[in-house]
Amino acid sequence: MGLTAVTEVVKLLGDSRPTLTDEDKEYILQFAFRTSDMELTSKLIDELCAPKKDSLAIYQKFQTMVDTKPEWISQIEDLLIALERYRVEEERAIKALTEVLAAYGVEVSEEEIKNVEVGEMKTWFKKEASL
Image (cartoon, rainbow, N blue to C red; front, side):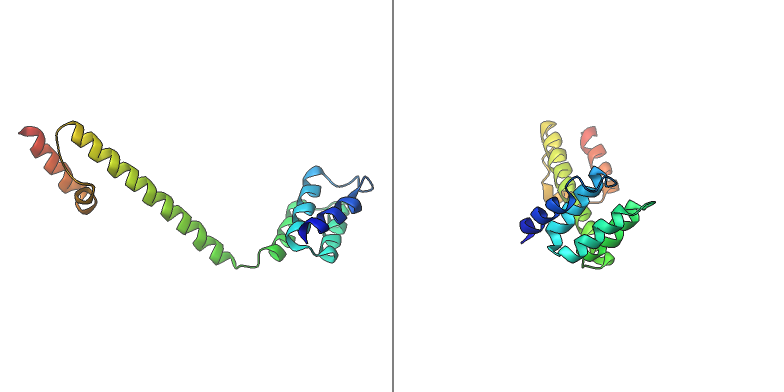
């Protein structure tokens, strides 16, 4: 249904709406695709065609109609994504550390590195280096 709405909107917009910027037109098309609601899309067009409009405020207003999940859920999703990115980076760092240590003849497993405190690890490495 989204593509049908986009087709209708493209016909609606045509060249008869000179006050709309390319950014406005793109937002309208995306909104029409996501909602497939021609009544709401028409209201969006009318608001964006008004003189002295605040496009960003209008975008935000209509975005709430597309995003039905509460803001706190979006924040949790963002935090979960960040957490997963940090986990991946931690795994890469631990793997790189074990490879560097192995190159210097120090055999330590990734699991040992995960479970030891950084200060303890420094002390251990200093002791190994002095041998």
